[in-house]
Structures are given as C-alpha cells and as structure tokens.
Length: 158
Image 1: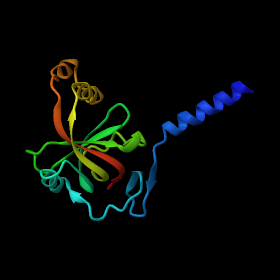
Image 2: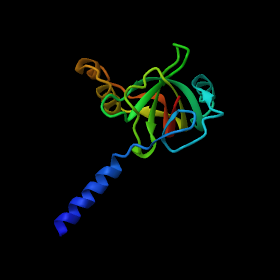
Image 3: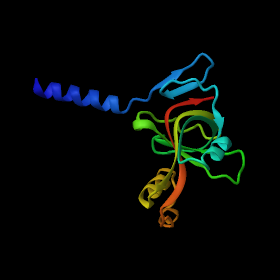
Image 4: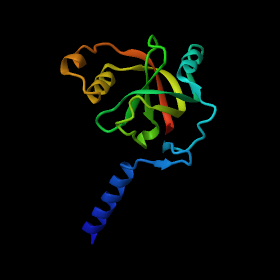
C-alpha cells in the first residue's frame, strides 16, 4: 500500500511540474500562463526607451519572437523592428509554463516585469547550448553581460 501511495504521489508531482497552462481565447489567440488583457501593451521599442530611465518596469509588451529554447520552450527572445536594437530574453515566472518551439516570427504580447540584469557566463553558455550553438561558439562566451530581460507571468500568441 505504501509503495502504491508513493507512486501516485510521484506521478502527481511530476504532472504538476510539467503542466503547460494553455487556453484559447475567443479571438483565437493562444494564452500561456496567467490570463491577461493584451490591450494597452507597448511596443518593444517603446520599452527600450522607457528602460533607459529605470532599472525595472511592470508592463505589457508586444513584439516579434526571434528564438525559442530548442530543448523545451523554457525561454524565448523578442526583437525590435529596428535591427540596431538588442534582443530581449523572456523567461516565464516560476518556470510555470513553456512556449511552443515553432513560434519564431510570430507576434506575442507578454505581461510581467522588465529588468536590467547581469547574465553570468554560465547562464549565457546554458542559453547558447539550449539554442543549439556549437561548442566553439559556446566557448567564446567568457564575460558576464548586462542585458534587458523580462519575466512573463502570461503570454498571448497572436
């Protein structure tokens, strides 16, 4: 009996850890994570301008997905319409949901918290590995870097 309860408990924990909150709204958009109204979102370029004056900002942002973690969709990057601007890495609050790996080029609205942060060499290498970069490319990462990041509580794919 104890063995049966242990198996049931382990199964329940693993299913809860792997859940991917997804709903479809009336407009046909897919929502991941916490539901929110995407209206009133600022553009990624507008966020870049606002972040010049602050270190963090709670906001909704719309932009284009440039990459998604190839391993399990645990992060994505967003880019500006202006090619001279840096990309922004988007992670998901409490690691509670993941994105489909086939959304590169799609427009999304993210709701959460933008912040300037320093990314360690180890984390940069981990992201590069998740992105499928070669061993040589990964070994070229030798210094921490400061970048704009976003912790999304919810994502709407348009």
